[in-house]
Length: 101
Length: 239
Image (cartoon, rainbow over all chains, first blue to last red; front, top):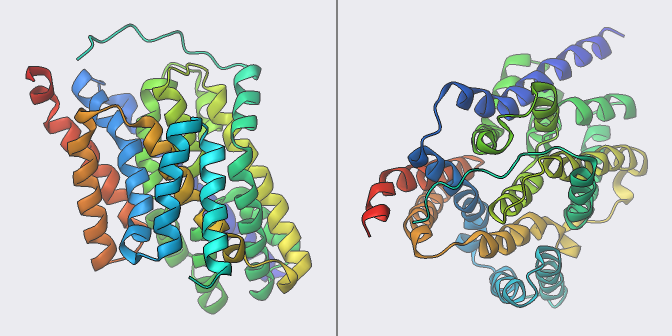
């Protein structure tokens, strides 16, 4: 059963690597004074990351996904519910794919 | 520009955890199915249900787990696996940094155990709530847990059910995180001041996606957005 032991050791080390990423940025910022300018930079990260998550979909340009993004933005504006907006978008994509678009 | 208002009292309460659990429901469904996909891949790579479960529990990084599994099945080399995890999870460094102003004053056992459960979806959701004035960091833990648990359950279910699991793409579930990103982006948009960082992030993301489609797209977008916001901070004040 040495394979299993090797594997257990491996996932513990991999888990430590994953946690280092999760905790690393937070820990690092402990030693950096958060000036208003830096805080502005940090608070710009979420929107930029969300755009980064969407970018491959925009670049690929499949119609169901692109239409869904517009629908999501509209539903979000109206309902102000991220769950409703996102699930509507997922439904649009599923429907578009079912229709072979 | 509004002046730096004193931050509202940061709390970490059970009510916040529950609020996070409720808010994360929508994302949890997608995570469950992706856990199943990983469970199937793990059984194909000859992992036992227990091994797959432990890997999902310790490593908890969807795409990175799938990638290391492929390498592991071939070579059993640890260093490439670690490098894969570090590279594919580099975006979490940004996520953690952005949480410092919110969670920095919490006792370490609270902040670091919350960070263990950090994922894309719950981080994005939490930052949106933070921008809306949320002070209870329990929200971050609750929304993290509500995605971690389905990931574990999905891993086991996929391992047991094998290839009988549904294809996530058929239900558009591969689009779930993108869909939430769009909804949250609309919601965190504050106005003209966001235009420059957002546009820069979009350009860089499209460029990186074209040259080297990978997890680096997200890292590059986040870094450039932060950099542009940092550099244009003074201009914003003068305007």
